[in-house]
Image (cartoon, rainbow, N blue to C red; front, side, top):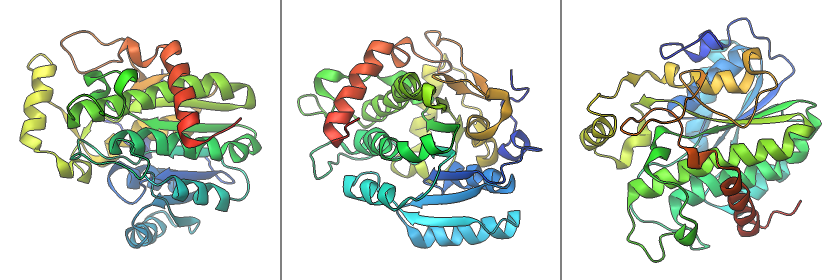
Length: 310
């Protein structure tokens, strides 16, 4: 549909796209594919805010993006997705319309950890933080008169559905990969339900897998182990690694390409809407990640947990 694929870069996807007058937020915009997503958006003329935990790293990244794109409208704001007070403060400080929200930040296969609320850290960061951020920025997204929200998921969603009976590993033994997979499934379910609810306001929401990219996202991971398990899950076919620029391409497509105007509630990989997953492979989308009943159930649980009212 888009004409782009595995090897496409974010810059190629947005070549010729004019985003002047558009405002974007990229969470985790100071590392990995977040940098390249922000670079592509800024290069197309958007005003870009890097929402980051480490503001010093954010300022260094912003300087690099300004120098490389010539776009001086690159800003930095503090955001800790594992801290609901930080999410609330970020949203309350935002002023004016928001055209693009890229929920990019995340933590992968981390050691056991909990937030102040007792939530499992990966689910709290990857899903609940982004859920609350998007919900609290809803007035700004509505004010844009046409906005896009992008949820960066992963092929790791194939590792686990959302286990509603024990989301926070209170009764089952903690497994970092199951926790990560569950949080990535939650990202897709968020896109399904958010698009259903918000499309009437001109807000379209999609999820994606960026592919395998070597970044600091893997700081908690033995990469050799990751390669072994992913290869086994893919029927013995090894991972094809992407550059960060290639890894950011599908995010850029869903954030701003006219190729997906009016499209929502989907899951994309390699700049195309994904096919259903075939057992024994690590491509495509699991049926449970697109299940509307699970999406609605997760939405209600997430809204109650983060004290979001509509």
